[in-house]
Each structure stands twice: as structure tokens, then as C-alpha cells.
Amino acid sequence: MSGVVIVGAGLGGLRSAEALRGAGYEGEITVVGDEPHLPYNRPPLSKEALLSGVDVEGLQFRRKATVEDVIWRLGAPAASSDLSARTVTLEDGSVLEFDGLVIASGIRPRRLPIPGPTTGRSVLRTATDAEHVRALLGPGVHVIIMGAGFIGCETAATARKLGAEVAVVAIDEQPMVRPLGAELGAGMRRRHERHGVHFHLGHTIDAFVGDDRVRSAALSDGSELPADIVIEAVGSVTNTEWLQGNGLDLSDGLLVDSAMQVDTEVAPVVAVGDIARHPNALFGDIPRRIEHWNMPTETGRRAGATLAALLAGAEPDRGPFTAMPSFWSDQYDHKLQSFGMPGIADRIELVEGEPDGPCIVEYHDASGLVGVVGVDRTQELAPYRKQLMTRSAS
Amino acid sequence: MTVKVFVDMDKCQHYGQCCFEADDIFHLDDDGKLQYVAEADDSRRDDIESAADVCPMQAITVE
Ligand SMILES: Cc1cc2nc3c(=O)[nH]c(=O)nc-3n(C[C@H](O)[C@H](O)[C@H](O)COP(=O)(O)OP(=O)(O)OC[C@H]3O[C@@H](n4cnc5c(N)ncnc54)[C@H](O)[C@@H]3O)c2cc1C
Ligand code: SF4
Image (cartoon, rainbow over all chains, first blue to last red; front, side, top):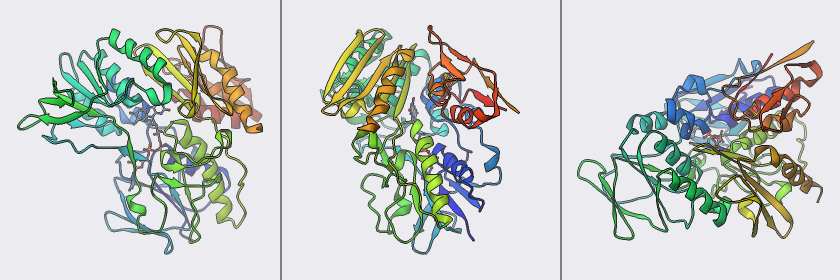
């Protein structure tokens, strides 16, 4: 009896452990994490924690009493795995045997190969990243943010609150355009501009300039922007290297079925959170990775139950997975909230308010309403969420 | 047996995620502010625990 190994000590890893216990699994659970910390909450890293200082202990999730006996192997990256031998090998050489495996290693920020110095270039994913960035931000500091997605925009807002001079450089036509659409994206851009952020949209950074460190960035339009720090938020890469050599499809995270089980005969393996490409019956069952905070909890619950069943020799529940993707974002005093999958829409309609103020936007495709986004309209969104939940019936 | 619910209102950002898990315990009022029931029957424990799990600010404590 060697128990369950969970690789990734983030929210998905924690919720999977709790769900295994919740489903009656009593064997040993070992959680392997490359970061030195117990699972903590990441969203504040671009918001409150970046503003007022990173207190990792304060950000830690409360852990249910049922997972008190979990063995945490922290600061210990998994280096490789052999699913048919049922082992995971850590970077320090230790070999962990498992009966069941949970893949919860998430994603990391993508780095673009841009010529020039690298000192001064940062990303924002971990508490360590946030501490580093926090120490460099302050009044008058020139910050370039690469990428105008949610993390880029939240970081821009926080850096402005700290008095920094902020420029956002992104290839997109509007900030957050893929999930929000051009009209609301433009409204969000104007909110940022009113707070003093400068956008350089439709452009890329060709090179960083500086001898020992980044001093400025050369843009594709020929201009040059001063930079004391560059924060890169241009998408993600899945942390799957430790799974190579097992014949798995790792092209976009781990493909799983509605029970979160990975398609392999050799061992019971499930995947959760940002790394899991899972079907959702509410949205046509096309498997997708969804990098929203609520998904590690939803997929973790399902995966834990699946693995507990498999280890007990029972058939897991393979009924449709119908968790509602939900996302929020804080930028200045604005609260943006999204339900469903606005990003898959082909028709977008502003149904209340205006893009520059409190508003509600509906997102449709041929099947009907697929998503809703509200800005400063949280309590009005409940009926939309309810309507989106009824998609499961169709 | 009852469940005691406490929401740290300094942390709560009134996202209302908790309301979807246990709408008899948590709701947003007309001003969008969170209101909640501080003590509930033990039969509500699972849903209240779920509400605590899904709170983005991790503002809910259950006893
Ligand atoms: C700055 C920031 C702001 C965000 N804001 C929001 C928001 O406002 N709203 C929202 O809905 N979502 C937000 N998110 C997204 C949300 O935080 C993620 O969806 C969530 O953290 C995913 O959880 P996870 O457990 O799948 O992955 P993670 O939390 O990334 O956990 C995976 C863990 O596995 C570790 N790991 C990786 N490889 C290995 C290995 N080989 N061995 C051992 N350990 C390994 C990683 O280091 C990490 O600790 C934000 C994310 C960031 C970074
Ligand atoms: S989910 Fe958390 S932050 Fe949101 S209203 Fe409930 S307690 Fe407040």
C-alpha cells in the first residue's frame, strides 16, 4: 500500500486531497510541491498583496481537519515519472511509489525570447515573484507591463496605486479582448487611462536595451519606452515536463474525461485545476483548460471522488461535468465578474449601462447565452448564472 | 448541534460566490452587501463548508 501522490501543492492539490478524504479514502496521501509554501491563494498577488505586502502565511488556505495527516513534500519539485511503474521521482532523487496519482502542477507564465538584458524582467505567479516585484515598485518607477490580459491589467492598476509610471505593451487591439470583446475591453482601457496608464496596443517589444540590466524597451513601432522593471503577463505554459515519456498527450495540459481521469490504462491518474483540459457539458463538451480560480475546487472535488472510487475497485461517476466557470477581477475600485465562457461567443451585446460605467454584457453563440460579464453589478448577475446553469438540460 | 458561521467583513469583497452554495445562509442585499446567518442547523454544514471553499477572499470561517 503506497497511497496517493499529488504533484502540485496549490489549490487544486489541496482540494483533491480533501475530496479523497471526503469520499472515504483512508490511505496515505503525499503532496509534492516545488514551492516552499503550503497551498496559498494566488489572486491577491496582483491585487491586495501586491499593494500592501505579501504575507504568505496570511494567504494560506485553511486546510480541513481531514487532511491533517497529509505528508507535505515542499520545496521538492517532481522531476520525472513512470506511470506504468507507478513512481514519481523528485529532483532530490527520492522515488515516491503510488497507487493513484493526482496531476495538479498547474501552469507557469510564458517567457518570450526577446533580445537584450534579462535582469529587470519579472513574472507574477508565485508569492516569491510578488515579493520581488513589490520591492521594486514605488512612486516614479517606470514599469512596462507586457500583455493586457487580466493579470497584466490588475498589475497595471496596482502599480499605479503605488505611484509607478505604467505602460502596457500588448499585441491585442484592446485589453482583455479575448474574454471581454472589443467594446468592454475599450471601456476597461479608458478606465485605466483615466488612472494614468499608457497603452501601446497592437505592438510588441523587439528588444530590451541596457548594458547590465533593462533600461528601456524598443517597440515594434520604432519608439523606445523607459523601464526600471518589466512584468511579463503574456500567457502560460503547462507544467508537464515531469510527465514526459509516458506516452500522454501533453499538447495542451492533460486531457481528461468528465470524471477528471487521464486516458491511460497503466495506473489510476486524474488531473485538476489549470492543467486539466476537461469537458464541460454546459458548453458543448469540447475539452478546454480554464484558468479560473473556481476550477481547481470544482475539478478537485470530482477528481478526488474518482480516484477514491478507482482505488476502492469501484466504477467512478462518469456523468456530465457541469461546473460553472466563474471569474472575478479587481481593477482600481472596479469589480468585474464573469460567469460562463464569454470567450467562445460570436455575438456580444451590452444589455445594461455603458462600457465606461457599471454595466452588464451578454455573450452568445449559436446555442444561446454562453457567458455574462458585469462591471460593478455583482448582485444583478445571479439570474444570468441561473440561466447559464440551465444549459445542462439542453 | 449547530454550525457557527463567521465572515470576516474586512476581507469580504461581496462577490457573492458563497450565496450559490448556500442561499439560505448567505445573500447579497439590495446594496450588494453580503448578509449572512451566523448560526445554522448542522444539516447545513456541507453546503456551508462548500461556501467557505469557494470564497475567493477566504473570508468565511465555519465552526
Ligand atoms: C497573479 C494571479 C492573479 C490571479 N487572479 C485571479 C482572479 O482574480 N480570478 C480568478 O478566477 N483567477 C485568478 N488567477 C488564477 C488562479 O489563481 C488559478 O486558476 C489557480 O491558482 C490554479 O490553481 P492550480 O492548483 O491549478 O494551480 P497552481 O495554483 O499554479 O498550483 C500548482 C502548483 O504546482 C507546482 N508545481 C509545478 N510543477 C511542479 C513540479 N514538477 N513538482 C512539484 N510542484 C510543481 C507549482 O509551482 C504550484 O505551486 C490568478 C492567478 C495569478 C497568478
Ligand atoms: S464569497 Fe466570500 S467575499 Fe464573496 S460575498 Fe461571500 S464571503 Fe464575501
